[in-house]
Amino acid sequence: MMKRLLAALAAAATIFTAGAATAQTFPDRPITMVVPFRAGGPTDTVGRLLSQAMSRNLGVQVQVQIVDGAGGTLGAQRVAEAAPDGYTILLYHVGMATTPTLYPNLGYDPLTDFAEIGLVTNVPMTLVGRQRLPVSTWEQLIAYMTNNIDRITMAHAGIGSASHLCAMLFSQLTGLDIVTVPFVGTAEAMLDLQADFVDFMCDQTTSTVAPIQSGSVIAYAVTSPVRLQQIPDVPTPAEVGLPGFQLDVWHGLWAPAGTPPEVVARLNEALRFALTDQQVLRTFALFATNPSPIEDQTPEALRAKVASEIELWRPLIEAAGEFVR
Ligand code: MLT
Image (cartoon, rainbow, N blue to C red; front, side):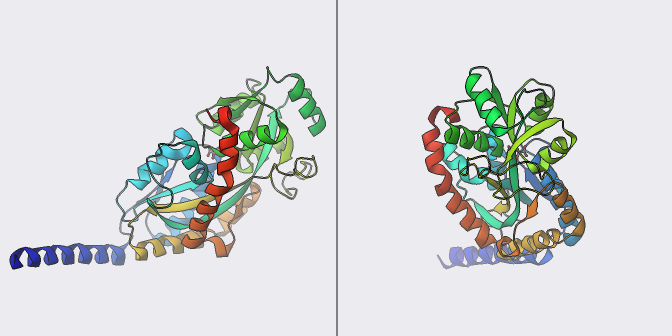
């Protein structure tokens, strides 16, 4: 009996020592940042900027790995199941809070299977249409949609994506039951929008500021409470008479649950460094993308955000019924 107890204590001490050594030497090899959406989309854009800046602080490569599918949940599950050593982290967005309601058999729990690192960005969305649509104002848009409801289509990047959530919110608020078309990513959807194969899309300003500025798509509204200086002619939800059409695509950074607190703290330090990096801030500004406020760049703030947003979106998703099938 005593021998078994001593052996167990020795094993526990070895594991603790190894863990402590890991935390003390972290990081000593490349880190994988899982981006759960297709390359070229808004999350990938944020991920590449963030990973490069975090690499400069951590002294090791932070490499983006695309693990897309099922509205970001496949990538999230990959990280939930990864070794809790800080070498696999997840960049995800509001989908972390909507998918528990959208996917009843989610393979992970957003609040127990992850160690939060901090909030990263707040990104507005825009409702855009293909350039050759015969509508340019909001009033013309609603009339056109109403009169052509059986013919028009709205693209998104899969159930659980921000583009899908935005389309669902728009449909709920207007009562327009638009046919939605899922794409593997919003970058692919944007190409079809510009080629007139799909009529509308909600997407993040990370991806839409440039085509709006170039005139290759028509912008009908932003989902932010104030107009955006990068696209100053695009009205706010209140200005078009749909004040509830507000959606902030917040992004967060997570590690697997069980990651040592010292490792999480080091990753948080690198995140906060990245969000003061001038190259990151300049590029974010081009996309009307804002770093989360400093007080939100903490594990506690991210955890509170996920918990509150799960409750915020649940009733809308449950009321959406068929829209989410
Ligand atoms: C993306 O990165 O492709 C987007 O975040 C997808 C989405 O959430 O609409």
